Image (cartoon, rainbow, N blue to C red):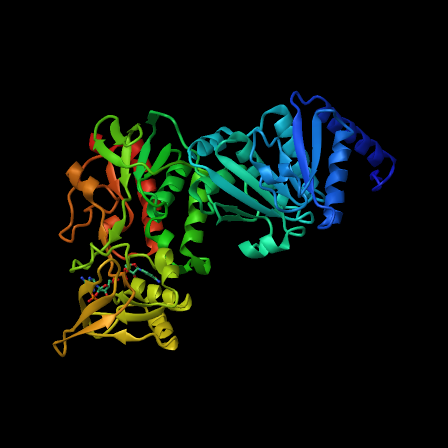
Length: 540
Ligand code: NAP
């Protein structure tokens, strides 16, 4: 019979005593003092004041290294530190800009203890990757973390914030706000779930994050869902360089490494390519509906399990040879083969006003810019799947949208067209946009009806252009790779281009533009490259 430890029994008590003694040792051996200032007011929030005092005294019993001063909210010192609520706890206020609004009790006692230990030992233990991200933050940043004593996820996120503020005392100031003690502040921020983190009043994270993702969200001022470690290497030796981190490139990375090759992915812009800015992806096998960004995050995380990704790096030159050299804005890669999975870029209308007002009411991405037009009037240009998907997305987020198409029929999927009708989204057929007007921002469009020959003006706040894509073939052209008459990369059935050792995959090859097809082409190219590298066709 297995012997179980009964909760609260003798052996559990012994273990607790041991853990308690170790904890005490940690506090006792702190090399530095931590000076706390507690500011209270005998009228407001008295139970929280008492709780804060009790938790501080409990720790002070274990160590003389925690110093405490207490002032009333009316005291001059409270004004000096600009404290207006009770209780507020300041940590080493001569050195850090860190304060706690409320009492560090319940789950939050863990955060409090960890924060004191980090300050007392003068080290946060952050990872090298986190440190690199933090080093990029050079401008002052005010971080506010909303927590509650009953939230088991909060300590992880609050500790992340403490680490950032302790590491960068002159740059990052931190306010931990207990929502139970400070409901009005939580209301003001609309923080109705915990943990939530704001930086300079911008919501940057909801829920607990791993340390590196927290730092990346703080640096980017936007919630990050995937963390890609940065590399300092000036030279990277590999078997396959994949240029482009869309579905084709990411899938090629997975399949190449699974075959036994070393592979890297280089992406100069947005990982995930067009998918990352697609509002909703329908019918990617296994998923009836999925957000474009969510699908991309899954793909990136999957690819990272196999291959290194170098985001934000522009490939400047590819010099075919043995080995082939790939020169980016940051380093040099040597490789046996290169896969061009460079995808496609938005097609432009090429009309008056388009380039001048781009970003000032003209957009190519409804997922990115749509929310700025809620309650406003826009047109979407195009008649394919993208235009219809974007019009539906805009309609669903409260934008007054009209679809404008140059022909009398749409070329989108039936189901999408049916959705347009079901949502009563107006469509102007046989209509071409001739001019986009506006001084500083879009104010109107000039529309030409190619059936009636009439030109009219429509007042709008925005124009979303979704008229397809052009293949990104600059690198291919530079390499002398042969293109098709339509301007796509010409390849044999095995994704080999006209230049030995250079391959292609995905939208840059033309054909049906579906995510599943790009992914399939990526895997097919990776397998073909593996076979070629085992048995090089250019040497036969
Ligand atoms: P698309 O299918 O090539 O359609 C482009 C649309 O823009 C066409 O209606 C075209 O008109 C119009 N157009 C092109 N140039 C124009 C110009 N200069 N002025 C006015 N209109 C112009 O492109 P897409 O809709 O961006 O889709 C790209 C690919 O992604 C397609 O293969 C599509 O199936 C795929 N996609 C699929 C989904 C999905 O499966 N749910 C969603 C989004 C995209 P004409 O009809 O007159 O040529």
